[in-house]
Picture (cartoon, one colour):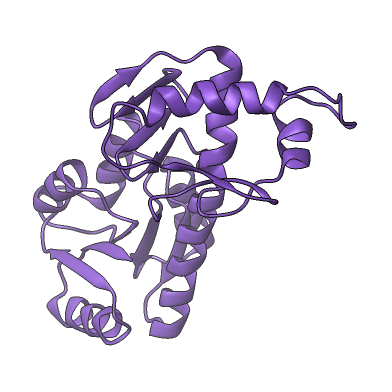
Length: 225
């Protein structure tokens, strides 16, 4: 994990930094609200730990500013203000969790792990990548080595399914069910035709093939030969 800590108490900061480093994590410390906000806007973090009472700019204002800019990085408030009303106000302004000082480091670490794991589950996948082949689900575009490729809708769906299952054998039955919505074998060569067309588009003009036929089993999209 890559964590941003915005905390003006050096003793608390040292304690938290040591704990994350000892667990093999990366953590960046900002001692003022202005510095913390700048880092939060300029860099990408897995989570932010922030004190409410900070010099130059308070923690609540930082959170509000980030949320107004659609920055959805998980935020945990770590504060000496631990009354119920304080917690409620912190959550209302946009924080995801609230831990009062004094605190146990293991609880802090676990809460951050939970926030990061929850964010990873909730964040929809919008881009798939295998080697230099990229598929953008929002723009509905495919490119390889920065060269745009024109795919038909069924070819796009086929490639998406192969990329979601990269490095795994995908059987003909799996393709029929998940790409064509068939739950029976239509006894046609529809898969062979589309695989051939897709291979022409994503592999023919490039040095290394990515779409492989696994004889007797199915197909695999992989950077490995």
